[in-house]
Image 1 (spheres, rainbow, N blue to C red):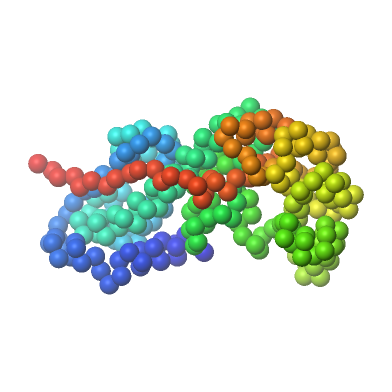
Image 2: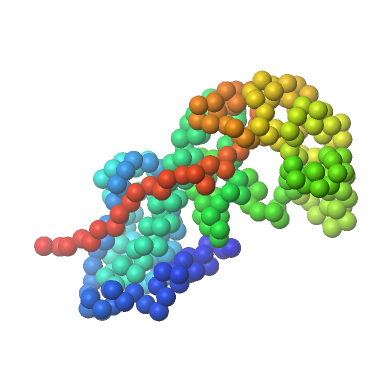
Length: 280
């Protein structure tokens, strides 16, 4: 889904046939200012999306930025100011904050994890464990926080996970059928295969014709053994049972990527607030 359309749908969901609270209580010609402040420390994300929301509500609203996507913010920091019709500001307020708070929460969580593996060559990846229809902004937030995006959906990369392999009748069948399928459909997609044991790793290496091997629920010592077997022939990704406490140990094994669904589905939104500015 394109970002512009996502913003349109979010506004439609919130506004319905009108912001009757504002329409009922505020004169249409009333001009106003609104400041968005940080109520806690973190990494800011969603500023560009917020600008899009304000502009879709009212193209005459003026936005002044004090912080940008990716900036570290502290409690009390002024992030942006919006100027224009008071009704327009209030009609956009909740949608703006919903996007910014969740995106900033994801960016903050990602930043904290990336910092934990600093000094290694390991890259942190997100997954498809996202909020329905909000994947584009959640994956944007991961990148703002210093992580990298895994595949966006089911269409842009082949990932043969445990269920695919079991339904296909084994690793060999799954890989061979996948390569035949891509050839028949004239598609060029990367292939990743999930492995559950060192024997699985040996089998994938022997078969070849894949791009990346996922090491699922391996211990760090098992990953070290797996990397010896793989011998640099394929990209490697670790996933499963990886926490803040042990992620550095995993990263130090030499694995190329660590993927974490928690980046987008187990985060706390960062608290931001829009306050009316009353000139006296």
